[in-house]
Structures are given as structure tokens and as C-alpha cells.
Image 1 (cartoon, rainbow, N blue to C red):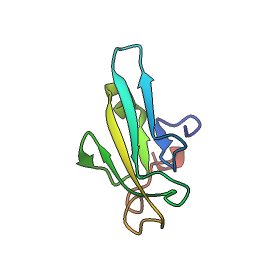
Image 2: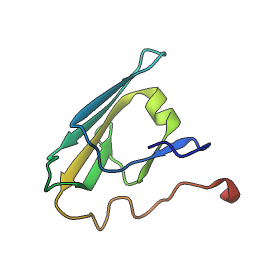
Image 3: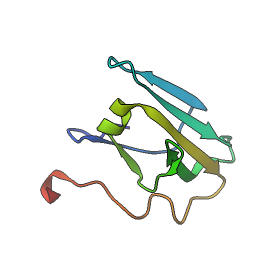
Image 4: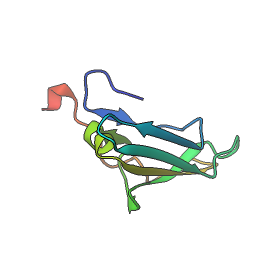
Length: 93
């Protein structure tokens, strides 16, 4: 979900098991979701290009660069993922 006038997107529970964003620069950004079901609707962990990704947001430039964002879903909310670093607001800059 894009955040108005900000260079990042908030990561939230997906509706699809895979999405591919084809970009004008030729790079593809792929979002893959593991274990998605009616029961497993909470994000347990995220990786970006096979590296652990703790942020609950992704910067626009990461999408432009292309790569793979993988979300692992579970039946309960994570107590770790997405709790550390928050995006800057315009007033924080």
C-alpha cells in the first residue's frame, strides 16, 4: 500500500500468493507469499532478496532495483517482525 507523498510502501497482509511488478527499466519486483490461507493471515517474517527484512515498509528504490520480497504467513501476529524501525515522516526529516 503506497503512503501518500512518501518514498515508501507499507507492507501488510497480501491477497495473492505471488505478484510481479514489471517496470519500465526492465527489472521485475516479485512478491512471493508462503503459507497464505484463511487461517494464516498474519506476517511472521519477511526477506528481501533472501536476506531477513525487519521493516514493516519498503522503500520505492528497492522496488525499482528489482528483486524478490518473500512473506511467510502464520496464524498469529509476529512479536518480532515489523516492530523495530518505522519510516520517517515529513516532520522527522
